[in-house]
Length: 66
Image 1 (cartoon, rainbow, N blue to C red):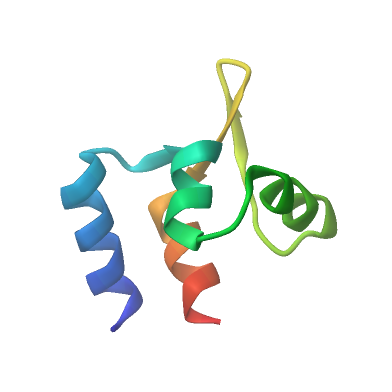
Image 2: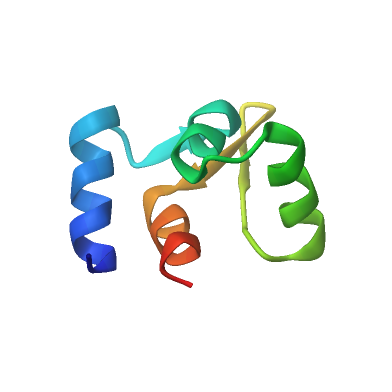
């Protein structure tokens, strides 16, 4: 599945371009703690929005494609 197709599927599921840490961990099938470790290592990039770490659908798709 291409990144574009994956982004489209995620958008249909969440109706948003951003996922919070819980949603991202669910899609990646990893714990929220592992997401924190991946962020610290620079393997996945999150953005702080209103005090909460959010992940773009494109970033989730990129990570899943690797």
